[in-house]
Length: 218
Image 1 (cartoon, one colour):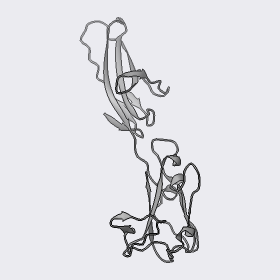
Image 2: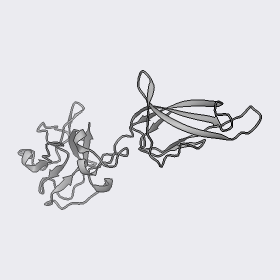
Image 3: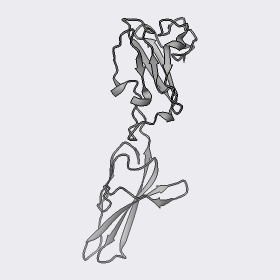
Image 4: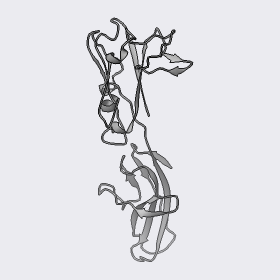
């Protein structure tokens, strides 16, 4: 079975007895991290994870990425030597980030033509698998097109980033003056996350025009 790290999941069991006498039992779940060789390292779970019921509930972000062996052991209280175990294997995978250029992932914003435009995916993107988004783990490339009038500038299908000086004669740059475009763009200069933000300076874009911005993160 496979679950994303941002997902809650539960494993249910069905216990059947084929014996006389008291059927009182204890149940215990254990979780071991698996490598390509074996599953030998037992995970110490948060106290909120109840491991003594027949059903095991794992809240989101409890387990790191990887493969785990979940084992349920049932022991007869009156005869501790009588016990049985059963295991299931679970893979925890990455959910994938949500890239947001502006706060809350807003899809449409309005700016005056002389106002600076801040695009900050390093700050506003979301990683559902973690409490915070780590901007330092990504590279950022920005693209822009004049919405509904042109495609993203490209050469033979290869997109041209917003700071690329190459000219696509069919799909013009968003910047109103292509020459000297470097002075119209200010990239975030953090040494740990270069280009994680972009400021398009006021006067760079034409008024009464809709632009579509896109960031590619890898």
